[in-house]
Length: 122
Ligand code: 5GP
Ligand code: ZN
Image (cartoon, rainbow, N blue to C red; front, side):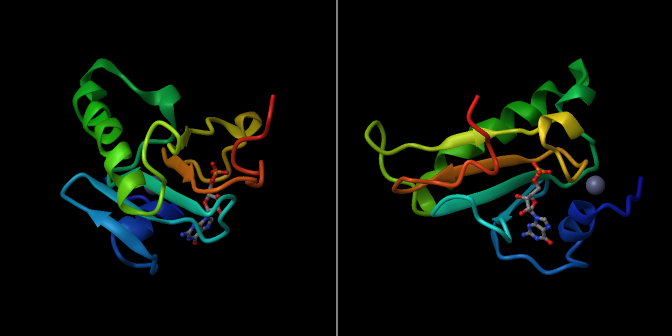
């Protein structure tokens, strides 16, 4: 199914992005307005609006997507565990802070302080 959302267009290379990883299923690229020294976005190439739409049939690719995160963090400037590390954020729904309704993980890291824009403090 073809979608016209911004991240579908980035996944189809119709809109440029600073891509750090691409495979058959996923794309990772730098956030255009970083909230931390390292701020990547990881998306599935197919359109799914948010975690609220995950069904049992999605468990396989969602697990593969999660497993990509530590390597992407380490390869793109997050400091080594456990003193370093990263924050994984999936804003879900408008009140959850989601502005682009195509599932994405924010991967944030690097020396603090960070902005709390992507993951407001509770
Ligand atoms: P959300 O608020 O939906 O969780 O996060 C959307 C993120 O997408 C924001 O952090 C925003 O800076 C980023 N963003 C919005 N438009 C673009 C774009 O055209 N390119 C890139 N690389 N990031 C974008
Ligand atoms: Zn989309």
